[in-house]
Image (cartoon, rainbow, N blue to C red):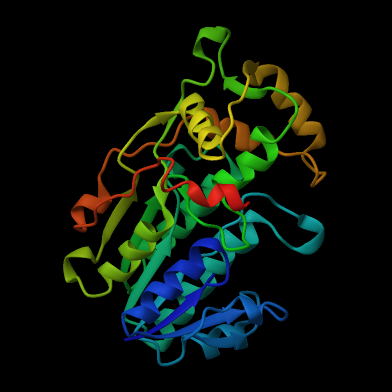
Length: 305
């Protein structure tokens, strides 16, 4: 199958491309100038970005399936990196061209929890979902929880926590949204392994029963924030002091400093974090994929980070 992917050079995209190539698909990746070295072996690079309609058209032309996998965690408006530009308008442009060019299948990477629509990250992801649902394409949507795995030089959830929190000389923050510190670090997330996410994308390409479906992708455990930090620390052979951190005090500071890239978290990221990130639907089970455990063995890559 000829598969075109927009967002195939980042952390998750690289694994998706690897999986598709290993299964014999012919893969083309839309690639920003200067990122050619990030394209996985076996895939073809199409030079351009999602704002370049000509390059996007060249990437999608003749494809049997298209994947839109662009997502950002933080905006940089000065360089044109915004949720609206990349997660909404870029997706809408790709969907429209896929319809025009007769691409049959369309797989959209969304995110778990977007129905809350409380942040720009969530509203733009949700807008992309709504656009593909009203298209003529045979669509499938994925909503993963936080994704972990060997970053291979990219940004990744656990590597970033290790760098920002575990390696810091300061106590790790146990965030809580209310007034009681007894709730500190008790919100839950279900980390899903990047290879399981890639396997889900590959699996639906040959399954007609996945058309028109949304799959939530979570790991086998819903862990508290405190448990996640403890496991990351243990995987690197250390322990970490943790202290309650009230979001009501931190959020205003984040609101003032989030425009600086050196500040580790934005106000919206804090809001989404303490809301938790678990699944109500076991998408991996529905696809016959056995989830990978969030344990010291599968976090072993952190020792090299």
